Length: 343
Image 1 (cartoon, one colour):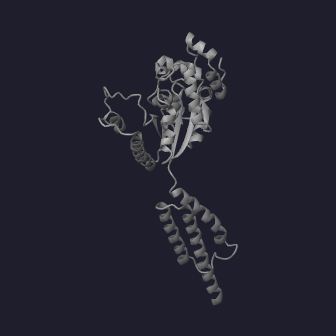
Image 2 (image 1 turned 45 degrees about the horizontal axis):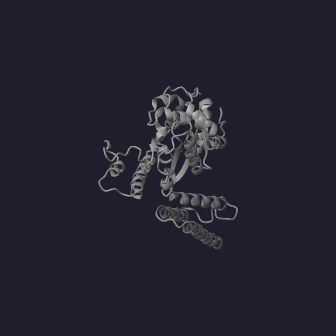
Image 3 (image 1 turned 135 degrees about the horizontal axis):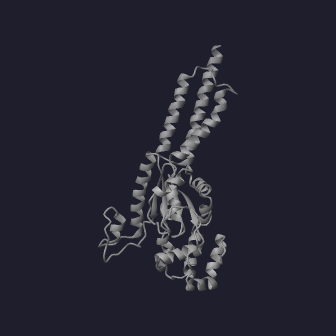
């Protein structure tokens, strides 16, 4: 009897050492400090506690519950260790101006536990006027854009990321999920070459695991809305052809990301939002649709009725109609997006 007892104790000690070595190998393979090392220490403490509390000879034999549970325990430990120092998840919504992005973003902002910030781009210069700076006392990046001694954009990005990390962590501690609505117009629809500067997704990628989505609309409808607001004048070539070329650059940059059509939102908003939330890793609530009128965001440039539905196309100016007929870039863009260029 004593021999069996000694054998069981020795076997359990051997198993414990193997378990600990397995966990240590997981951490060593990952080469992650900090939280993972803390987790490793906690796991070792638990294994020591099991050794002290478990009666000798119980649950250690081949085929026992303990031996069968060990692989799943180690799998769980591996997942926890890998997650301990994984970058936090940041959700991005990307679209061109006048594509229905504001009402879609308002719907997302109404989803459970979501904090959505609208029209974000730390390198935007659309509102910068060094000759007559506007009042923005809470915006350090904007202040630096107007400072006597200019700084490079790398520092502006670092400023942005530092505040974003604090914000993300603070919201996570409160059980809230941060979603950023990218102000792509600042990058793609101004005189500056989009390739000469990073976009929001590229800026945040070193610090976050990015979950991006793209929403689109028939480019003719969005261009007509740009004209109504006067924003087509931001383009280096303020024509439908010039707009189509910049839109194609945006699609190149976001190729492979989940893409959703505004027209589908107007026809089946609940289904559209359910799919959009799934792509972003958000909980979907059909009640959010009823809350859209209560949500206010910047960038609400379109027709302001809260009714979700297809709208009649705006009148097409003669010069735009001529551009439609001769622009190869516009036709290619429509084909790429799945729209009829003449419809």
